[in-house]
Length: 215
Ligand code: PRP
Image 1 (spheres, rainbow, N blue to C red):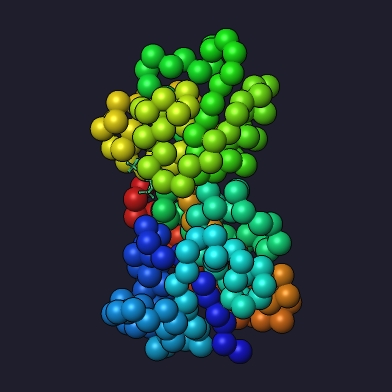
Image 2 (image 1 turned 135 degrees about the vertical axis):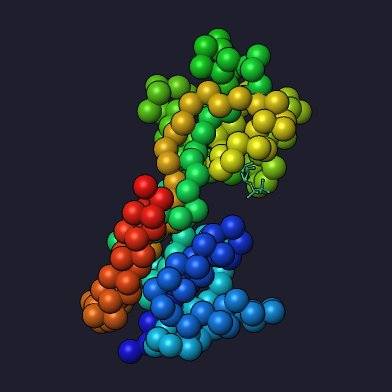
């Protein structure tokens, strides 16, 4: 039975395709994709499609994709009607709390405002610290919001740290590490169990090899 696989386009895409290559799969079409969005594997009974991170969860939850590759950041913020079965150990970064050096938001008396693309993650983090903050949803370039005085600090993703550094922001705390995960539709896991377990075994061996070669 053909397995359909939703891949997150953008930052994660290159690393994901590399991993599928390492599995020995036929990803030529994914690498020469033009404007196409659906791609057949040339060696395995697999069909890929490229979607935005949030949509990856939606397609998997609805069973249109049997499996998906998506960042833990999106999973923490999005739905939960799927199985998360493998940490692919790619797309590694972390959620951080950052601010201008002069904005000591953890010791601020009074109203604290936090800008973020991830309101749920931010809310949970501050609730965990016993702080009742106002969350302001920002859709991109979150680092701009404390610079312009919209908020006291941000909860955002840090990969290299360049964006924070170039905008004079400092890390106040780490919320949690992030990496790409393999998620699986619940019904597909019953109906296509063998195919999914084979895929997981292939990916798992690549994860292990990659971990060994970076030691
Ligand atoms: C992400 C994130 C930071 C930046 C961090 O934004 O929100 O802004 O990357 O990366 P760095 O630590 O390597 O500098 P993205 O590039 O996805 O764009 P956006 O700000 O428009 O969401």
